[in-house]
Length: 174
Image 1: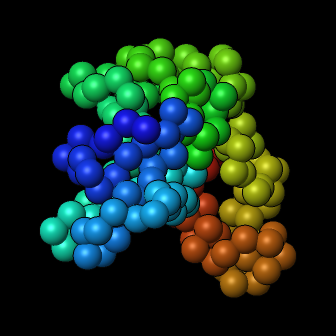
Image 2: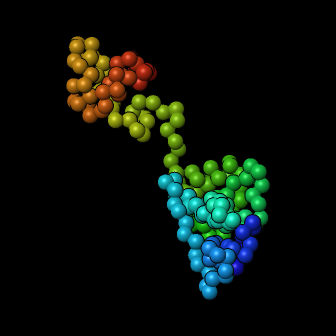
Image 3: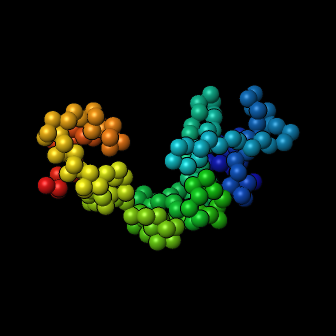
């Protein structure tokens, strides 16, 4: 096992990237090292909490693995999960890369879809309405139908109807 920089004698890492606690709360060596629990964030990345002198330090687990096994990550460099699984922090699943290489890997290798920036109306992946529906909403509102009833009919929130009739949304449509 390899000692973790700054936490030598208290924590160590196995060759598989698993962090182990070597000492108990009193500082006495444990009979057998205990694995440290990782916490998974909403975005899928794991966090590892290490304590020393009653102070807890939180690390992104993949960074802790890389830096323990390979040294510091250069400024501007990123770590890439080769298989795309953010919770898989084995050393062989991590590689150093540039931001550009990381994005190319994300879209070309892992098959992520391009984001919807620049797409409008029905072309936007989050669109709930069609161009025809928007035209009907504007026409029915001009004839006096309340926004709340239009929202119920078209299955959207009243603020969406408000944005449409005020041309905050679907501006490109006459």
